[in-house]
Image (cartoon, rainbow, N blue to C red; front, side, top):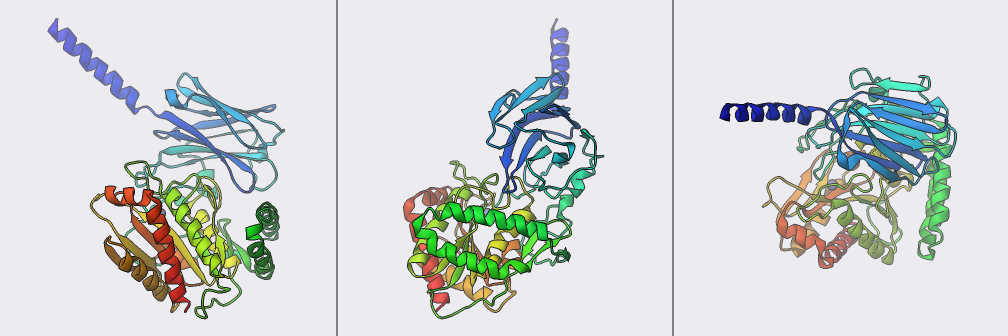
Length: 452
Ligand SMILES: [Zn+2]
């Protein structure tokens, strides 16, 4: 009897292991980017094949993996293409049904996969992009797109990949980043090849302009921002011609004017970049604090204080959103932030982040720069000194690193790591208004000293 029981347990164990190892769909997410592309992202615990079928106005994405209980159900979508999707368990496969509000052609959607990324903890993903208008590159296939991780060519050529580090910073990636190699975040300075600029794309610019007009109309409702917006339109007009597109479809804008480094804050153009946002929470603390929320709160206060002192501030984002679009590649997302600074001929770029470490006892401020101008270090020193002198936390000092934003911005740029979300004391600290207010004030004071 005992033998049978043991055998039964052994068998049960084997079956359980087999089930546990089979790929499972754990979540289906969606997002809409600024080009009105609706993106569905299916998280799968392991590599799985997929197929897309368009039957009238019903779009069906089938992923060859069992649906986990929490993934199944109806989800509301906010898009001009669909208002909901249904995730259905179909035996060993999972189906995502999207009833479309308008008729799509086969060239209006494309599917591809993103590899599992052990470094960021991101699972294997099947991505389906649906476009309401002709803003994305059409696929050459027929009405059915099928593939697996191994055969899907579009996974390599797709303009969008996602492998963001969960920790504070994103290192510079080479232009082959679409092949999903994650570089370490250690500050060792590597110099990847500059993205090859192939041509100026007129269409992109027009779209971007459209987008800009939209944003401006929306913002001009807020009287407070009117002056800045008017200015930015003028600036925009003067820099329009400097937008180029890289081989992998990235829009790169270059400032046409020379940055200024003295004469006070009055009239200076400063771009503030609240790190992360939207589909990318950044680092998350043990108490659930998200880096993207803290960076935005502090950035808004920095903006307010700078504007009071007469500076013209551009924010890469003013709410909880991705700057380029949901689930975009690091390069696309970070270049979009650089583009804001370049477009408005900024005099300085300040990216605000919260650090994170596996060692919970590590804490403190640090400021990163890349020595591409004579002023990057000066700006970093000014900010780091002001923070270190006025806070009772560790001074981790000024550090050189080749982070994408600090390296690619043509004007002096810094990335400030405002304490550690992984440190319980500092997480509590940053949840409070006092910390946010004081950090913002000190950063503004540092900028004032830098521009003096
Ligand atoms: Zn960060």
